[in-house]
Image (cartoon, rainbow, N blue to C red; front, side):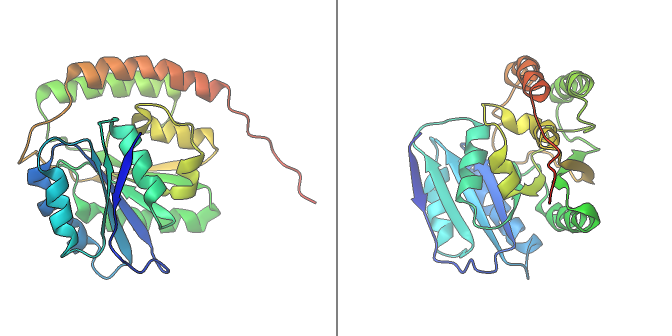
Length: 253
């Protein structure tokens, strides 16, 4: 996987949060979403990492232009498309903050929800330190009937087989520990199973209701085939990983 980096000079010593946004052919959504993220996180120390997953439109030049006016923006570029999970992984690897928030680049996730996820994280971390992920829960989906149907089936089968106690793993808006994420087993489509994978590491996952918006610009890259059937096949592999997890209870002197 070939990567290209475009980096702003930005103070990272007190960085609180890295916001990772994977995109492919989202030239119309880049500037509005970057502006929303900056507004939502005003007053915080944060960076925005866009991962351009082999776009063939003007996503890359638009991102380069934005870097001149948005000092928090950093960009990673894949020469060829590698998929959303790999794009998320590239972004997390490039992140410089201990906490990472992810959201989809199509504008359907609301960046205004990120501060609340961060607040939930801080509350949960103060309890026992075993929190691994705060997962967004789209309680009012603004999608087509086909997408809601395929998601409902996949969520039902996944929840039944993996017992991950998460109503909406497909929501792109999540907040998690960078360190814990990088310990997870990587595979294509892993982003759809993050709650189960964090629980495999004996870390708690908390679901938090978030806003969900209709797509206003651009065209969806996902359909019934690559959201439902592929996901159902992947569940078998994740189930295999969960059964083989070993988490010893260490004796401390």
